[in-house]
Amino acid sequence: MENILVVREVTKDLSWVEVLHNVSFEVKTWQIYWFLGPNWAWKTTTMKCIMWLITPESWEINILWDNKLSTKTKSQIGFMPENTYLYKHLTWEEFLRFNWNFFWFQKEVLEKKIEELLKKVWLYDAKDKYLAEYSKWMLQRVWLAQSIINDPKILFLDEPMSWLDPIWRKMVKDLLVELNKSWTTIFFNTHILADVESICDSFSIIHKWSIIVKNKDIKSLDKPLEDFFIEEISKD
Image (spheres, rainbow, N blue to C red):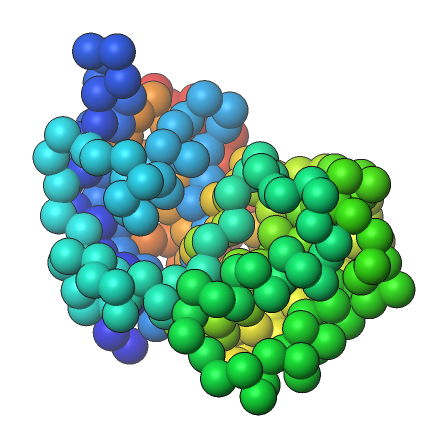
């Protein structure tokens, strides 16, 4: 399989302190790929650099075979941030309609698409409520729906299950597997190992500003992922 995402020697400084040092890894098409690390490993910063939400000091980044992140490429990317910043005085349905306008899709498919998304994240019955009335775990599912409204070829998720209970975590994982079977590549940023081991194909580990394990096939492990993870971060 080809690489849908290539990251080479990304370095980032914040307040004149280096927080990412020569970060490099690749993600193959149609993988579920996990980017692992303990707290304060700068996983979110790496993701923001990849999508040009912040500018690294040095880099080589290629997404969907495009090293300039053109408008066409952006239209094929989905993104769910860890912290949700939503228009609280819109309803669920109005928020999706607003986001739909960024992608120049035909209006004929809008109604069907919104209904489909509402049902996929199990919020159809709450579609007329204002987002200000939603709990954090409900808002996370709103963001998840927003991130896949354009049927992205690659989907970036930053801690998408951090506030969910076990039932909803299982439902979100099932949805991600379904998306992946529909040829969506998923790049998942998390430090929750149970989420990784059950559905991912491969992973990298970042620790102390650098990649310490690169593109590891989950099936190649000869021990539980938790043991492997702790051993690797304890070496440094």
